[in-house]
Image (tube, rainbow, N blue to C red; front, side, top):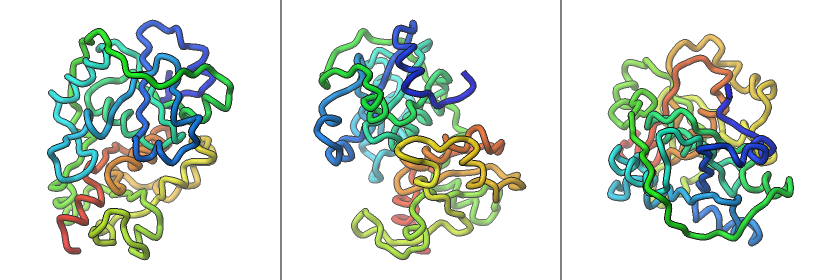
Length: 272
């Protein structure tokens, strides 16, 4: 496949594909906002990918921080994931946290990973089979990490970029948050933006819980047509940055990365 986004129809038609693993990547705090019939079910045979507790550095002061190679490898193996697994990730919110998991696997060197467009709501809307959520044990997989550091940015990289301006930072928070007109959701975190960054709210790449078509997305990225620099996506805590990263995959040829700490780290560690 030449895209990282797959439809509910495609997944339904390929459920019996050898080596297929379906991962439910829903953030629990987001799940509680959803209708009860969505909260309690999963796509048949889906495995829960716990972003917060198992695939983040829980010792880091910032939320959903990038995990170590050894942690990611161990937890992926515990889910029964192998090096030859074809992975489809989905979110009960439609499109929210699943692109983060797509990017995590991509950064760990796994190429066969795809995002279900529209997530669980789209799957349910189509009338495809679900089952009650359940915890299971899996045969340990042989997944191995081959980290690709070039698509990950840390605080010092962004700090250095203030003077070099070698990369363009795209902030995907809402326009009001980007412009400091509203308070940040995290209590005590200052408002503002990274100097020289530009704004593309992540909601602009979505429509009814799914990605907009390539043709509908092109105007959104048109102002970047002559931009030759690598692009770094940032957001509040490194989740929705991955939404716009994925949306731009088949449109922008620039090399791309995600600032993992995003505004929560930058706003917490800097004063301007």
